[in-house]
Length: 381
Ligand SMILES: *Cc1c(COP(=O)(O)O)cnc(C)c1O
Image 1 (cartoon, rainbow, N blue to C red):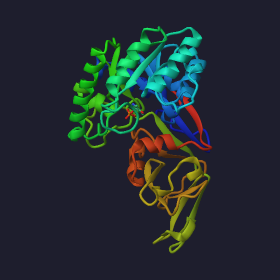
Image 2 (image 1 turned 30 degrees about the vertical axis):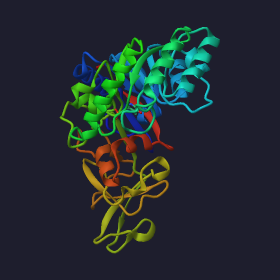
Image 3 (image 1 turned 90 degrees about the horizontal axis):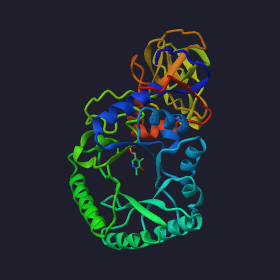
Image 4 (image 1 turned 60 degrees about the vertical axis):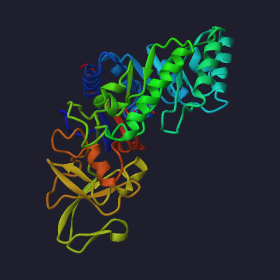
């Protein structure tokens, strides 16, 4: 971030140049595998449509989302490239996603049949990615169900209603490269691919890696990697991932509502969980847990004001929190930064995650509420 001044009470500033930079770095690292930029959950809080366009311009061959609604929104915004949507519930309609030429995932035979029925009704061939559960016990066919799912799908291919273009899975512990699940899942995935090919399925893409595996485990890249958190510049496996030069794209900042002096012994915020040991100055930050700032961030989290990190004091409230300015008296209206890229010494989403006892994913996807969003940068690598 070059221009630091906040333009609002509370805003998320999303640096599209950082997104483009991260996509370029990831593409280079995973080549010859292709890159799917995962933009589900409003691009992890960064804004789905803008991030998607930026990722495409930076060369992401694929986009990935969880829900059909997310996929249809991307098409409505003009995206025309390869796009996979992977989460439905029984009874969900495939009409809109198939009409929008979105690739869909299938975990079960009834799903394959529902996809085929809708595709046939539309006179199309649906592009399907079959999912094998290699150990997460979340979505996907079990090893026992897999041969039948493949054989059934192959038979349905003959009707022209579907084409199985992909086989995929998801990792248990990609952020722990030494975890034995990685090896087990790799073996099960390789076996599932053999079964699929033996059933006569002609695959375009095989994919199992998310960000951590894409960065750290070349053996799991196959044809395509699905990167979310790394696209946003956050570390998929803090303390483990090598430094590959990712830049965090989101800054949460705004203008202090108030600066004032408090006396020694003054308690701060609900329950007086913090009592000033000496006279100090405090700043009022006009965001709170209704905006996705975790209540559990205090004690531990810091904000950045006037070139220094300042501790959050007392409980985070619904709409406000208090920081300790330690005797400094910036003007009310001065810029505060809760987290950003860290380039100027401000805290990062990772710092907030550590203060809360969670992962950086939850920090960036959680912020929102009444914060406004502003984009900076041209979005070119
Ligand atoms: C969210 C998600 C990803 C992206 O994971 P990151 O760790 O953010 O890279 C990849 N694949 C699936 C199935 C997901 O749900």
